[in-house]
Image (cartoon, rainbow, N blue to C red):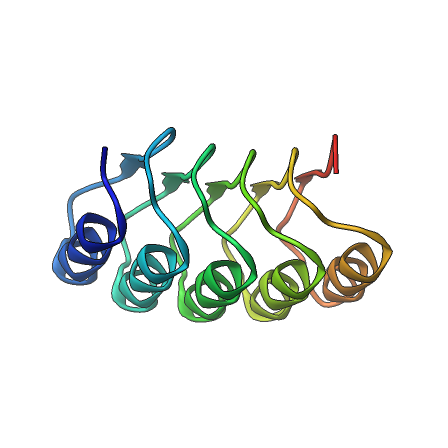
Length: 140
């Protein structure tokens, strides 16, 4: 089971990697620290198109870290965060990254803990985003 240390190490790796296009990390033990590390890796990566982090332990702080990565990333087209512990603050943080992101087309936030405030934050980011075509918020 990959945890925070492994995810942070992968974040360092993707920051320097120009070949890897898909990274699937579902059903592991990645928490906020690991998600922030992956977000930091996304800021420098220009190759990864798919990142799947479903069914982990990512909460608001991890989602905010991924949002910061999205703000700078120009390659990632699919981000799957289904089945985590992301609430309103995390959704708002992801939305802040989406507002300036020009690549992401699919964001799956199903089965999290997002309520009205998080949905409003995401909605506000959609006004500025021109690339997102699929946003899944089922079962929140």
